Amino acid sequence: MRILSGIQPSGKIHIGNYLGMIRPMVQYQDRGELFCFIANMHSLTTVFSGEKIRENITDALIDLLSLGIDPERSIFWVQSDVPEVAELTWYLGALTPLGLLQRCHSFKDKVARNIPASCGLFTYPVLMAADILMYRSNIVPVGQDQKQHVEVTRDIAIKFNMQYGEILTIPEAEIHEDIAVVPGIDGQKMSKSYDNTIDIFAPEKELRKKIMSIVTDSAPVEAKKDPQANNVYLLYKLFAPAADSAVMADKFRSGGYGYGEAKKQLFTVLMEHFTEQRKKRERIVADMSYVEEVRRKGAQKARAIGAEVLDKVRKAVGVA
Image 1 (tube, helix red, strand yellow):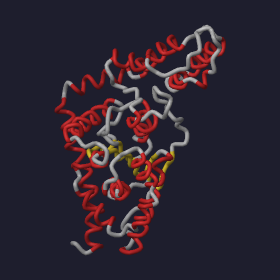
Image 2 (tube, helix red, strand yellow; image 1 turned 30 degrees about the vertical axis):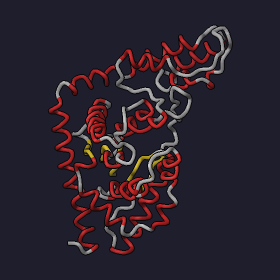
Image 3 (cartoon, one colour; image 1 turned 60 degrees about the vertical axis):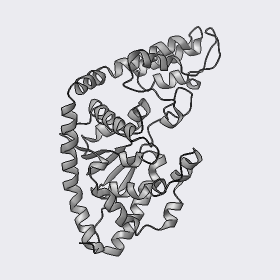
Image 4 (cartoon, one colour; image 1 turned 180 degrees about the vertical axis):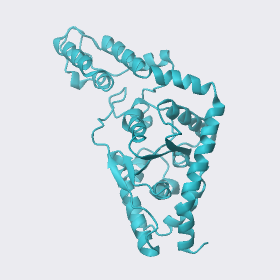
């Protein structure tokens, strides 16, 4: 079983990325053949600084390696290091109905958030389809908000196969229903777009400051509080053992327990949870030649595998 997953290098990796995508991605290395890529071509629709894109790619490579992606147990590469994916995007786009893309809610949602309505943003699902289909992916793990893009990929692949024969593998989406929405420091869903994230590898002092800035209500220390109604507890229980989460919940319900103390406990549990990963990141940063070698070898492997599908597509459409 071939599993494909990608992450955009649009900013620092935060705990929402980790719980929603990266931790499951690491676990997929034990389930099947993992294809994991850094989707830097996709990020060009929202990040318009070449310097920032380059910086984010390097950070993403280091972060994913630090968090458990093993290049010996997966195919791990940077999207643009396989330029053939852009060629496949054109062949797929030539068959993709305009109406199919017009129904995609992601474009409308991003434009509503004042992201420029570019051609690239509109045709984003076709590039995503190329990412998936180029490597004959069987399973594509996505959140509920990305499910439609996998459905679009299936529609494109089916239409292509009907026109040219059974060349493309029809993928299945695997929806992560069990991952709770991770609240940001302002209570909204944690997202780089809202600037409300808690970055995993932030310096200790910066991480503490960010956690202490989590928005809470104005209830006094002595007041009884509903643990399910405050962001500190909701974040804490995502990382703390169940018994420790129950203790914090009881303290909130009993009163005499303030948000400041709870934030200190959240900081402690996050530092403990990511201790080994933070140490590993320091070792990787000290040997950037390793990162460069991982990137080079990953691209070689991905290009060799993707070429098999692209060659068939070229012949089918008549350009080879």
